[in-house]
Amino acid sequence: MSARRPNGPLRRFRLQEVALRIERGEAPNLARLAADLGYVDQAHLARDFKAAVGKSPSAFAAGVEG
Image (cartoon, rainbow, N blue to C red):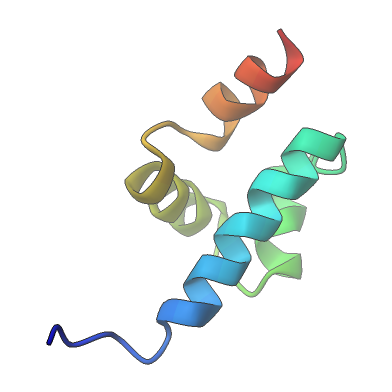
């Protein structure tokens, strides 16, 4: 059995929300999105997203757009 961090479900929710808002075009400002979702700052959101998804939020958005 592996130990899970208690904030794991919250992290997953926030990352899914970031991806959904980017896909819907509802995330023109990552700093605002980070604040809305409870991240300390935009850099924290970007690091967390890249660790989970394998690309930065801006690279993810570019893939959605094109």
